[in-house]
Length: 351
Image: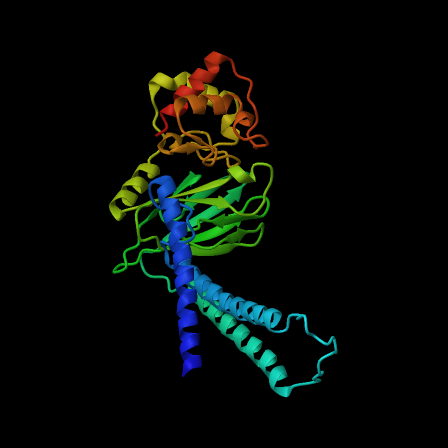
């Protein structure tokens, strides 16, 4: 009974230590940023991330218990069998072979590995084979060097760099299923609070899903080195109420605004071959190399989250993209100050 009690309280102490560690990490993140960090792995807000979080805590408990046992035995052996002043320096009796010990250090590790394997397999099955309810949102995410393209086949729209999804209610789940593709090299889609890392591999479609349960902005990162601007290939996921999401979809489905006051800038956009790379729905610009610019000014950031989307930053980005993202695929276009102002004025109307 005494041994069982010690094991119970040892496990409770380990669980408490893990909980305190996680709480301390989350608290530190909150105090630093005034709220939960958008990339805090200890604050999951989606079923896949929550499943990973709990299986990770279980693994930490198991490995922590093994560490405590092994380290305790090591300390015991060091103290118990340390050299003393009155030692006679004779070799102690040698024991060769012990079936009990051999069985113990073979069976116990096998059982531990089996339990850990089954725990992980359960989570993998729950995440990868999740049931697809009616009303689920489909998104195709295509990774480029060094930006994200998002296609919404249900709604017939394409946008870039900022992913919008509806919040998922527990009573009426509305998960978002994301098909992952790469246009060039290996990338990885990782938004810590929503799901685990999932690779995007050329010619090998992959998939994942999320069901965020709280509105807000969730940040992530391309987690696979993909080139010089890998660090600035950021992920921004906007989780909105269903009404706000439907409103956003309706706005994004509209063709580009045709403002006569910026006709010169629109003509320059075509004359300077910007339309070869970029698409603006409702115009002759149907490029597929760069981001869709139909509603570029409805986004909060430019260059895949590298800078805020302001008129000054937009103008500076057009003039010299290398100043923001050295090694980016957007070429430097030779423009006079007047031409730069005209093209910038035209893009500012694309909301």
